[in-house]
Image 1 (tube, rainbow, N blue to C red):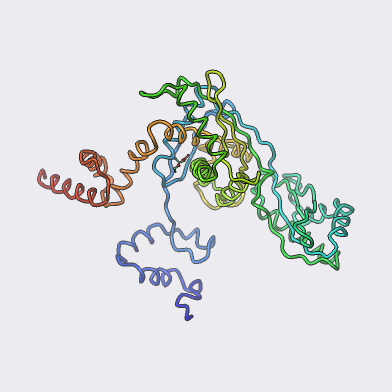
Image 2: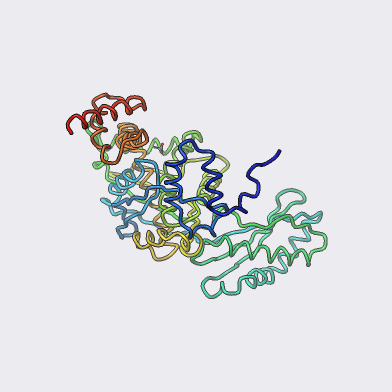
Length: 423
Ligand code: MEV
């Protein structure tokens, strides 16, 4: 196929912009948006940089973790996420807040090997463990200034001939991807020289972050869960049942965990983290027992509903996006987190609060009511209302009882006609 845009990266910015605009109907308006969000700072960060894609950032409140009150910067386009996080946090903070502990904060990587005699590789690794750890650390000499560096090397058989050489690293305050990958490549070359009959397929960190685990626990009094039509005890019981259903039904667990990630991703993005790494770690952890399960557990205990969750939170406090995205640093200051473990605990706590709010809504009034307030605003904006018109259009729309695009457009038109009439 004759590829029209092959070599796109060779063009200067204005030529690239023209090529892009050539594909767009309303090129004039789009140019203003694309160009208006261009920031030359980023042209060396990603290939074919075009513009900055904006997502809204807001602040969730009421979250108390280990006796400290947090403001949580969250980046999300989903209207109800921040309100839900603040609501869930309030329920938990009224009852002592969330207690969080970091179980471990390490990064792992793997080197995939192929050998007809795996037992000789196992023996070699056992006998040369300290040496291999040294090779890993020498590839990143400065690591010892701020962390323990590579800690251990172990073999794992994958089948009759393939094996994984797992390297565990303490990367300190960094997320560790670059550190671990350079260590792995150093060990990989060393092995290639040392082991004649072993083929080395590849070396890469693993996003299976079972060594970056946080445990969070919180409770809310049953009284506080009551609604106009349901007692707190019934609501608490239903939330507990909902968490049980997510343990036994993978179909439900997927949505249950998506709700947890609504909060976790939003906070992780705001704090400058690789949310794809988090997503893949969390879902891999959710299936660790051979069946995909919900990550939270809510149980009634006397007059309380008590929630618990253990979850991998592979993040970094320094390096990566925190170096290049100015808001990531600012958001760390807003949240007042000062190291990676505090940030891990904060992000995991957001997930627990988010889940409580989602389950409460689901077993009581349903999700639509809460969602719709803000979702209607988004829909009104998406259908052309200006920021000044939104509130009034939403009010007029409420009278119609509908919120489909056609009705919204009609209401916006009527609103404009009325406004023009009254000058
Ligand atoms: C919506 O984004 C998230 C929920 O579906 C989560 C859940 O069902 O638990 C409300």
